Image (cartoon, rainbow, N blue to C red; front, side, top):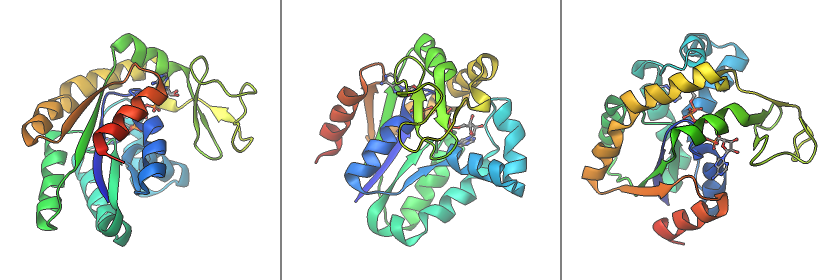
Length: 216
Ligand code: AP5
């Protein structure tokens, strides 16, 4: 059982470490960004509403996010295994709603995994990221290149750039993070759940430190 949140700016490595954490601890991975991208792909009402915010690098309004996360957390697998939230909460209002849900259900957050990465590195990571159209695996053209350019090692799918990973939108996402999401660091420091990690270290080193902090 693990109840954890991944916190950090766009490109900090949340999604990358999430894959490893959910495999090791066998917890459901709840990425609000992935949920929105799936809805956009499927052309749902939620997808249509979220799309314009995401393409502009803005946050999707809280009222479109909170209910869907609370619904997901209410499902059986989260009650028995816990959860790894990735990209939620992103505002103080979202964090308060999450706390309310946890309190109402007699649950407690084990850890908030907070990544720190400098803006220059973030920009290079975001603009160089490529994602598999088929299985969603994430690569980086320099840091984590696929064996064959443009092709996924895992499933042979086509690699593409996310719509919000262009320079202008990525810069805006970092600005929005600083203004609206960074205050959560202070919020979680007060609860005692915050654990800081240097997100500029190599992937394996970061993961080892996370495991050390959570426990085997
Ligand atoms: P979301 O999908 O959550 O994106 P994000 O937070 O901007 O995070 P990213 O996915 O860009 O980065 P990451 O930290 O996961 O980095 P990654 O591991 O891929 O949200 C997208 C949008 O949805 C938001 O802008 C917003 O509009 C909306 N949204 C989502 N949730 C919301 C919410 N709760 N409220 C309101 N709106 C919401 O790594 C990046 C790259 O770096 C990769 O190429 C990777 O290979 C590489 N890399 C990672 N770690 C390392 C390392 N240690 N060394 C070298 N390279 C590395």
